[in-house]
Image (cartoon, rainbow, N blue to C red; front, side):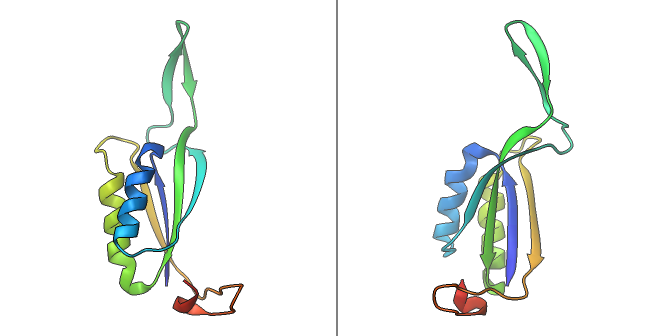
Amino acid sequence: MKKIEAVIRHFKLDEVKQALVDAGITGITVSEVKGYGRQHGHKEMYRGTEYSVDFVPKTLIEVVVADDQLGAAIEAISTNARTGEVGDGKLTITDLFDAIRIRTSERGTLAL
């Protein structure tokens, strides 16, 4: 099993979610987060005054998939989150040791 964490632009969430559903991925967790990468925030104008926004609002998607679904999940996220501009986000993938469904005590990929 693998856990995918994807930090994406908030307006791309619906496209990414639908692509994951189409790929057969049944569950995701979504959080609103703030951060910065290479762009180190950005500058904005408000009432004629320029100010710096250090942390950019983003959306964090967490998906746990069986090993055989990993490629489809990565493709769904990366293709549908891409705008081609700086700040599109990042995907990280980690190995999972186990998963347990609390209601039924199913373990491993059965718990997904």
